[in-house]
Amino acid sequence: MVQPLFELSDLYGINNLADQVKVAESRRVYLLKATNVDIDDEGMVKRRLGQDLKLSASVHSMWANKAEDTCLYMQSGVLKSLSTAYAGTTLLSGLSSDARMVYCEDPAGTIYFTNNIDIGKVVSGTASLFSSPSQTFKVKMKPGQLIEWYNNRLYTIQGRIAWHSDPGAPTYMDKRKNFTQMGDRITMWKGVSDGIWVSATRETGFLLGKDPSEFAYMKVTDSGAYEGTAIKLDGEDIGESQLGTVVLWTSAEGVFMGLTQGQVKNLTWDVYQPAYESVRGTGIYRSDRGFGQYVACYELLTGNGAIDGWGEFPKMTGTGYMAA
Image (cartoon, rainbow, N blue to C red; front, side, top):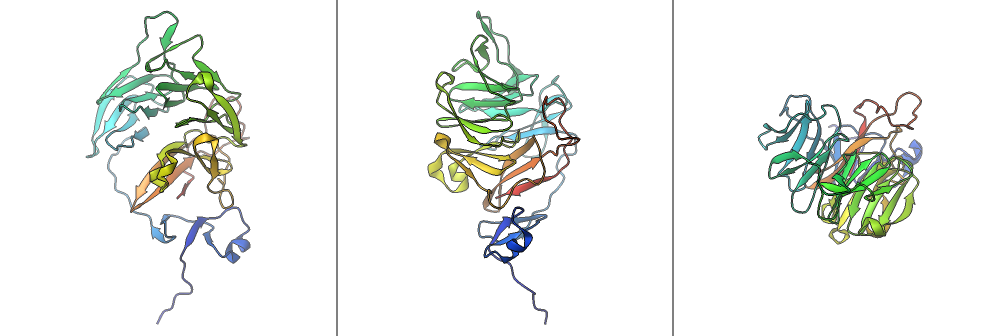
């Protein structure tokens, strides 16, 4: 009769910070490496589900809204929507083919998109680019590398400048005053109920206030979010409905959760930090077999690792991680 050498239960995920001997001696059981497995809320290891090819195409910048009724992506300069039958429908052509598209949605269900070159919206399945207003001193909202909806305004980020629309008028802005400038390239701009979580490359802070005229900045951490890894969740998604909207992001110090009033939690501070230096990645929320996961992938820096200037981003290597 074959007997198992040992049994594992109540696993707490990966620990890549402690000495391997210390990990082995710990009362809590950690893994040093995990490939193609999930760890559920009860600490049990399960094989990750397989995958089926649904769409064979060269695509990028895929995004889906929380209601799960809209999925958008880019293919050869065309903005498309993906149906539940995995059929693509063209929404808008003639866009920059390789530029990374980002998205956000307002409470009414309008989806806004930009790729730092183009900017537009999707309303009831119809996409269009913003047009220029005719009012004096008003200009079309500027495109950006990030986009966010907060307190009845649309925000777009260009380098270290955050542009904001006029209230209730997301397609245009006053070119004389509708901006907030940070000290470095902005890599995260995500709103919660009473302010905005913002990273400027090498630090993360909180802009407390409902309107740009009353923003008060407080520094919170000494690391900036990897651009693209920040996502917003409802507290109920993580079993904490009283928290309201929260923001999750990845930085060189690990995975963080930002709450209201500038409160922050480093969810992995004593067990996990990214193994490689990076500046940009992507993040999603994944619900699988009854438990939720924050999933992030990040690009590796190449060459001497310098990020000043941000001209060319390194190629995506496929290296990443998953944190429950």
